[in-house]
Length: 373
View 1: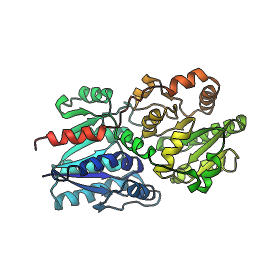
View 2: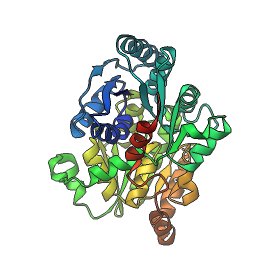
View 3: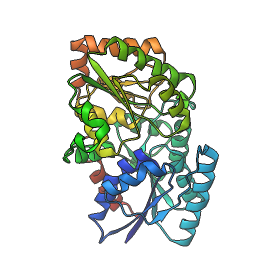
């Protein structure tokens, strides 16, 4: 009996691990799968656990108000170490590049438990963009034993760093598995009063997600000023919906600049079901997120990335993603062009998603079952 522990703590991790947990459950006679959450994003993950019917075996519950990276790192490292000391696991699975994932992988390495990295091999080659994710994923990949790369490019990055090809499986990204499952579920925007009126609006909807640490301070203010300007310039043509992250470094400037603008709706963070249906409904996405860059192309939505660089260049190469940075004028110009240039919009919206086909979890579990311990 193979015994695996899946560790995660943030909203994106839950979404991307959920289809993998579901797939593991299909092999309950061969794999014992246990789930540990760090609580890094406490309020934002609980609804997802319910949506995906995930049973939690270990809840570290580490979240503190305005927590720093040191707190997350040391708490997860210590508590995962205790779990691995008390119970024998063959693999610890971590996803992506969060501090929870990095600390859990390090704890497994310290206890000589094998590490499986889902979404391995992403690189920007700039340790401060995104921060701290670029360093987190490099640390994880330095101690991992199995690497589940979402694209061929990610595999090439790993091979250049000396990872053996036999330890890598190119699978696509599990976020596509989750997205396709959830967007197939029925959803009525009338269930959320604040969204109900906007859902009936005939104007083009621009969905905004912006929360990254490197955008704290002036960058997030620049982004908000761009949205404010565009909302006024195109008041009869577009509306913005921005689910605002709970971090006060984001909330303060966002509400200061954008509150009470008629065609800008600021909401609390949305559960994944309504969010995925907004993604399905929107005209384009303005984001500094990682996962959204992979999700949106599956639904034919262009993505403008408000970062200096991206670890997901496949979308840029394919033509469905454009990096626009955080300069106010550049953001305004990029959105304005997509609103006015129909040929460019159609070209971006018709690209085949380079990040997966919805079968990544199947490929991951199939590979795990082949492994000799």
